[in-house]
Amino acid sequence: MKLLRVGTAGAERPALLDAEGVLRDLSGIVPDIDGPLLADTAALGRIRAAADAGSLPVLDADGLRVGPPLARIGKVVCIGLNYHDHARETGAEPPAEPVIFFKAADTVVGPYDTVLVPRGSVKTDWEVELAVVIGRTARYLESHEEALAHVAGYAVAHDVSEREFQIERGGTWDKGKNCETFNPLGPWLVTADEVPDPQALSLKLWVNGELKQDGTTAEQIFPVAEVVRYVSQFMTLYPGDVINTGTPAGVALGQPEPKPFLRAGDVVELEISGLGKQRQELKDA
Image 1 (cartoon, one colour):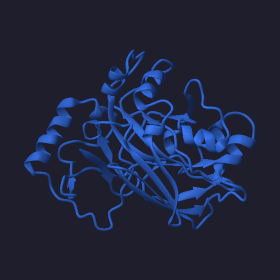
Image 2 (tube, one colour; image 1 turned 180 degrees about the vertical axis):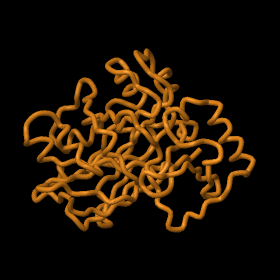
Image 3 (cartoon, one colour; image 1 turned 45 degrees about the horizontal axis):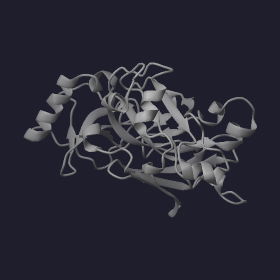
């Protein structure tokens, strides 16, 4: 299923995109798309049954904002340097273990919302990423099979980053990752049954119509199953938590000088096969 949330920011309603591409209203069946829903197999079953029966009301998508496909996110765990080609372009050694950092849940915005260039920023960068959404409480998982069984679904994430803040201003990466609007998510949460192999997805990103990133999750140093298993050794993952699993080559940081960092007025488009496409215009904060 393709689950999403539509409406003005803070007042989104749950919806479903059916097999024919028709937007359907879920608000009569479930209150929202969130962690409790993803952990409730009975509720998910009711959605599937209603979708199969064609009984869900149609929503007029014209002019309707698409919000983040997940409400009340607990935490956004991010994996750094998780693609062989991205490590090569930045001159970094592939890590022996996954690099973990966090984005605050309040960085998450809709897939077509404005992205704000932080005040004083000269190195705002793009990163298309596969987001993993947790559906069952996970702690100390022992196998890849067990890890994938705890995944509710997948989404497109844009891990916007400010490289000066991240790398040159001391401390951890977090100050370059947590500026407002720095994690567009969606348009859909695609349930795991529709993604039989998360290591066979293409990722693409364009800036002002120019293709910048063209990668595949097959290049991940630590595949999705290992990322989920590994993270569960250090923290408990709850339904509705999100893991951003890293970006392929092609970011501004890895390009020759002068590096083409983002500015107000730029337009970024990104997509992952089967998971939908995002588009953001950048403006000054």
